[in-house]
Length: 375
Length: 130
Image (cartoon, rainbow over all chains, first blue to last red; front, side):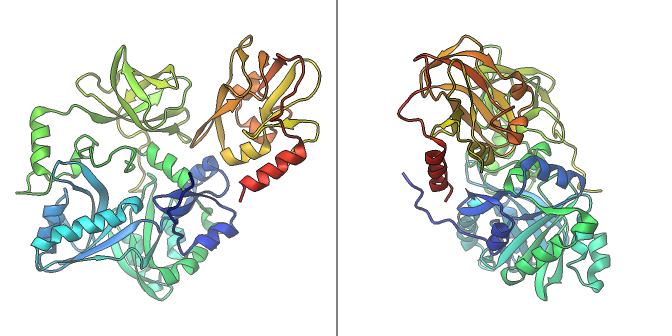
């Protein structure tokens, strides 16, 4: 059988080809997986700076006088806590408490929000949010994904790289931008958004740029290389970087059958809000206790854990690996697993079934790599 | 991409020596390039026997695990421990220091209709790498 779904290309596709990137299909897109080597790219982000084309990610704009009340209803976190310019990690749930997606909600003004969603879920998310908004007549929901390219600039020297894109007037604001906040600016003469967020565990920025300004922004950022050490990074290193920081990957660590409490993001659930979609299920899970929960683990010895491998405590099957890999910065291998918290706790040694061989792993505190996002 | 003339190749991207006696087996430069960073290699024990086309080990990159397939039927008489302890050495040189196992062919010599010479393998790879 051959793949018949046409894959989409970002406005930077020709740049990737010119840089001889290896590409793979991801979430319906043809995306760079690496330019040189996953391990070298991983190291570059930890030690200097990496540039990622993440234009496959989706963007949804929600506005209107009831926008806050609507997002309180449809997302797990509380957007009323945000001042204009601030952002928060959140998720949208189905009525059974399962995650439709995880996302970042930025408040742009009192009644306008900008939401960044996962590539593979963008159409589904937009349809769901739009459908829910029918009960909120004062709210409009727009899918802005086709308009925006997204670049992520991540690493200790990321601020110096992003400076090259921002006008003199906005430099002070950029420098003072706190973690998770967003600002409006001009990039290549076009109105753009610049957020202090990321998916690597390093200090970094995510830029939402109108498509027509994406190639010149990409080139301007790469031109800072002599000063910043910036280099392009593919999805391969993006995955090992996020895994070390224990950031969840939709479709691996959670999906529409996993609740945010099980996924270990209970801190993002504003459970005291009067109502939100999925609340009843989360309240019930809190009362009864969880039967599975995300744990971080490190392999003790050889064996590389992979998605879906079974995890045992003695003869007892206690769950499955959700993400696993070598861990380039920490050394060795490890990952995350959905395990039964009634049977294991942090500090326990468990066994991962690596293609028929039991390999030892130790459950450790989250995260594996302590993020330096506020540096 | 280098595919030495003296070797035979499989469509699973292994190479095999054609000399008499025990012969070395490894993976091709194309396989190595496709895998990217090689981070783990698992090989069989000396003395194990394998049918042609059966899996005798695995090779892992940061992202994926691939099976290693026997080009011929035979018995493993030596494994390259250096390839296990330093999997990245395969990237530097998949044909010399990067050999994986040495096998005594069951048939006494290397033969098989499915084995390709360097030219045929090179052509096969160029059709894969669209």
